[in-house]
Length: 156
Image 1 (cartoon, helix red, strand yellow):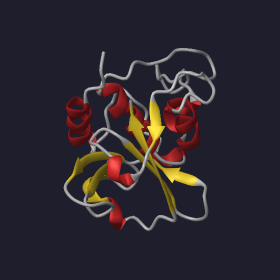
Image 2 (tube, one colour):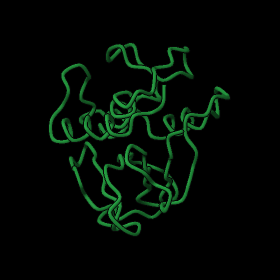
Image 3 (cartoon, one colour):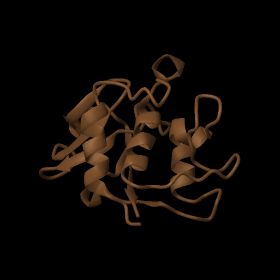
Image 4 (tube, one colour):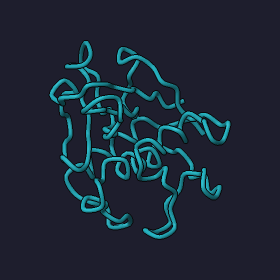
């Protein structure tokens, strides 16, 4: 089943400023951005991978993988670094499409945030609009984030 970018963006629009009660809000546990990004990916049709340790799934707050909520773990999972089954590829910002993830580092090269692309309305980065949790946003220009490094992940 192909990834449904419209469904992913619709989910992001619905839940950008509120929390889906089916998922724990990780805001007070280090941030909710990657949890939200994972929800968006799943809403777009990316199936959960219930492989222990290296999979990508959320059943409840106690039965989930680190890749569901952790920036670096999501990156490793999507690229297939632990499983050999890539679901995304690192691209340039010019290849970003709605439903993709753009991970950001704010100091140095440690990535700390996983906003979701919801629209591309011009040249990057100002033309890339994102949604996110933690600092809740929908339609926020990527250029308004004070990032030191960017890692666009194009969902395959």
